[in-house]
Amino acid sequence: MRRFYLRRWSSRSKAFLVLAVACGAGAFGLVRGYETRLATLTPAVGTPVPVVVAAEPISRGAVLGEEVLRIAEVPSAFAPPGALRSIADAVGRSLVSDLAAGEVVTRTRIGTAGGPVAAQVPSGLRAFVVPSGMPTGSVRAGDHVDVLATFGGPRPYSDTVASALEVLSVLEAEPEGFAASGSGAGPSLVLLVTPDAAERLAYAKAFAELTVTIAGLG
Image: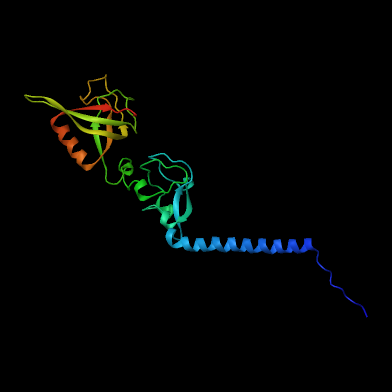
C-alpha cells in the first residue's frame, strides 16, 4: 500500500500566502470603493453625452467643415448650454469667436444663417457701418475703436457715442487721397454693437460728424 504524505508549508510560504490574500483583498476593496464613488458621483455629474468639439484651433469667421470637428463625450453636468450634439448641425456655419482645440461648439459660437456679415454677428448684437476717415490699412478686423460725434450749432460740442467697439470687418475703399477724419473718406468699418449703441450711432450719423479713434491694447 502506498502512503501519501502532505507536504508541510514552511513559515516563509505561509507568510507569502497571507500576503497574497491580503493584497488581493486590498485590491478588491479599492476597486469596489472606486466603483462605489463613481456610482455616487453619477447623479451629480450625469451620464456621458456626445458634444461637438474643435479638432484643431479654428479662427473666427471660418466656415466649419467636418475635417475640423469631432465628437467627444462629457458628463451631462459639464456640457455647456447650447452645446451641439451633431457635426451636421455645425457644418457650413461660420464661427463668431475663436475656438481652441477641444473646445465645445455651442449655438452662441456659430453665426446664424445669412450673408457673410450676418453669419459672424453673435446673438444679441448688431453690425453697424461707419466711415473711418482713415487711410486704408489703419484698422483691421479685431481692433477696438471709439466713435465720437461732433454736433454743430451755436455751441458745437463733441461727445463719445460708443466706446470699445469691436471691428467685425473693414470695407476697403480706394480714396484719392487722405481726407480728414469724419469726412467719410477711407474704408468703412463694420462694428459690432448692441441695439442701444446702434440707435445712438444712427442718431449721431444723421446729425453730427463722426470721428473714429483706435483703442490701444491695454
